Length: 481
Image 1 (tube, rainbow, N blue to C red):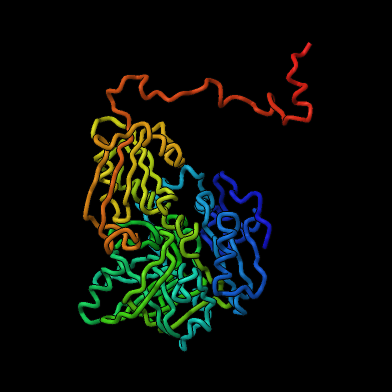
Image 2 (cartoon, helix red, strand yellow):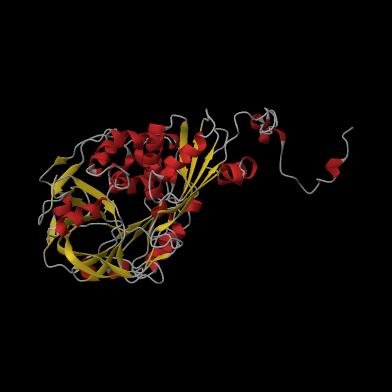
């Protein structure tokens, strides 16, 4: 096992490549960046694709990205753990950690249209005779997963009426040499598919594996129907994203990606898919799911295969931070008092939302709770706090609930609402939601909620006033003469 690097957190200051663009605009450039700062581990040849790749990637998660050489004897390397730390995401964007949400918001509000090109590295090699497990090193992650899964592929589909694309990540089970089982939750891909299926037609799709970090993050933006996330990726890049048309359909894919799987979501076809270890740290159940039939695989001459371990930090954070940015924008449109939001890791970066507000009116906290619950069906519990509470510290949030919240006055309950189908406590995605208004009443006496503070504590130079105790520590108790 490689030694865990001591500087895993990485630099906090804004950075850029030599071309002036953020480090995350290129997958291989990002791997170079991680290597130079001691955060890329090369794993010996022959690591087993069944469980061992995931086991090593999980052990290194948030400390180091993993590069597996000849995994399972396959010539294509596997990479994992590219974005398993919040600070790394800031680095990839070229901003300070405090500016991540604002930068993502700006990109979502000011997308840059992509530019179609003919020279696509992702199409240097074309396989029309498809055998997924022979041609790609697809791992099996968790103990009871039903088999090998593609977990870091951007599934790109196209609105059959408008032609506008959607980009998202879905779990994709290898069911046969040329078939993938797909879990489609009630979002845009499913909406597009339902329209084509109602006409008895398949939906053209592409699954893009091996993307730059910024395009990965852009895929998780929560935007209205017919907003192409590749244009948000372009805004994060600071220039139009290069795309190419697939060789077998009309989908446009990132031209500089590593691997593209082209196919169709089959109308009126469902097959067994699952179980699969999901982000709530439980298994998504086995059921009849949608099916992709693969028509071709295109790739670079020597590609990299990216996998995201189900339920690992990369899985949680990749979905969490873009959702925070989208949720912050959603709330600030209606509530100017909202200062910050955070999807807590204890809530699997999906279910528990902390909101910081500069409270101006009584009842405002409850309105913010209702707005947050309506912002995305995944949100299950919301805690609203004042500006003196650090929402990125779960101990601070728990303290605010413990000392500023009374259930008979400050609790909001909503029953029988749509939630996450992957939350095992729901009834097929239907359950209850709850909000905690842990803000200070505006008419409270000044000293009732005044936080204690020791003057000068933050200014103490500990190195100047203290030293480690030696063997003579008891002798030093005697008063000096």
